[in-house]
Length: 74
Image (cartoon, rainbow, N blue to C red; front, side, top):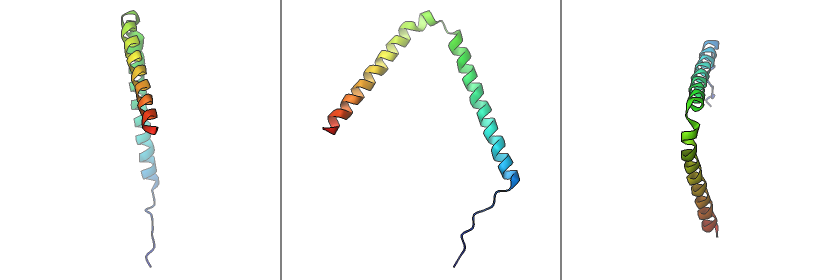
């Protein structure tokens, strides 16, 4: 019989993984910060009609998808 052994993780490996997690979270936070600034700076009056159009298209698309799913179930 052979024993199944899993490699033991050293403290250095754990620290490296934790460091990578922190760096990844910092990159995500920087991206979200950049998006927040962009949203705050856009001319909302100019974008109002565009946003309404795209939201309406998204809504209609979702309704059509739901209707398609309901038809397939029957």
